[in-house]
Amino acid sequence: MDKNLPDKIIGLDQVRINRGLEKICKCEKRKFMIDTKNRRVTCRSCGAVLDPYDALYELAYADEERNRQIEQFFEQKKQIANYKPWLVVIKKLEKQYRGRKMIPNCPRCSEPFYLEELVQWTGKPYADARIKKWREQAETD
Image (cartoon, rainbow, N blue to C red):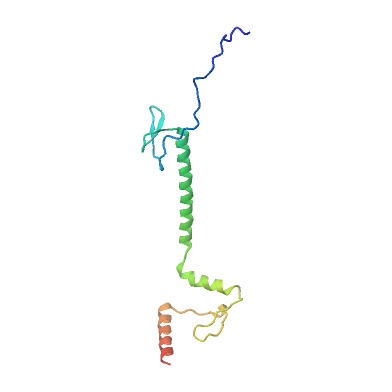
């Protein structure tokens, strides 16, 4: 036998693994307190000492979730910025037009017409007054 090896082999019977234990801290939304002198991470709610890896993982996961929400908010902001309420009627007409398969009818005489036939526009106050007058005449007739 080698002279450098001890004669007796020492077993590690003093060390046992208990895999049935649960985590000490079961708080829903943990808030961490970092002890820089002792290099420990504890839960501010229950005071349990936490594994630094678990705390770091939880913070990284929360950061990813926050970034995903921020991206979603920016996307909504873009949609709101691109929303033009004055074009809602035009967009609705565009959907109904279907590439000249359907054409609109005049609301007054009910005759169909092509959108290309629209060549003049009228100011809204003047048009509102004309429409009101037209409706009053239609009611009296």
